[in-house]
Image 1 (tube, helix red, strand yellow):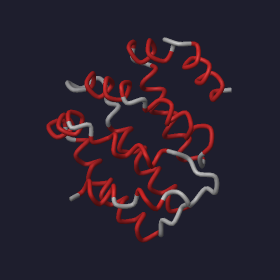
Image 2 (spheres, helix red, strand yellow):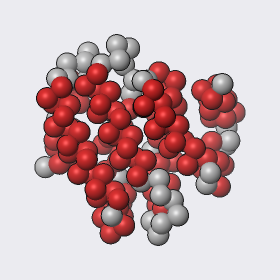
Image 3 (cartoon, helix red, strand yellow):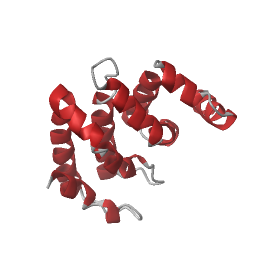
Image 4 (cartoon, one colour):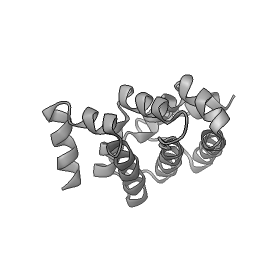
Amino acid sequence: MLLLEVTSVYRKFSPSMLSMREATRVCCALALFQVLANNPETRRGLIKAKIPCYFYPFLKPCEDHDEPLEHVRITTLGVLGDLTKFDDPYGSQALHLFLESEVVPLCLKCMDACDEMSRKLATLIVMKILTQESGLTYCCATPERFFAIVQVLR
């Protein structure tokens, strides 16, 4: 049911027709996912089921800096940030999920085009990924990835 609550607003993104009430409902569902992400026992299940991938559509920036969508984006980045505890027993699985699902380019777009709080949270996620050897290897594996990061960090 939580996942259904989150995915039910996808169709309201382009063009943005998300009301503040709907955004609040999604943020509440995401907050419950954040509780699950903070618990070492439930974190593994979230990662194994690739639940964070369902949150990625909220990371795509829109042209008109829509306030309800920005609230959802900030909450989403908070959930993903809680999954970047790479030193816990399931941290390597979380990192692998983030790298295979290409969360870095989505965070780079947030760093480049979103409001300040989203930029800060996305930067923190990218920084935590870059501090891991496999994360750094991933980001430097192709010139395109490397230069995309350098360009956003300028």
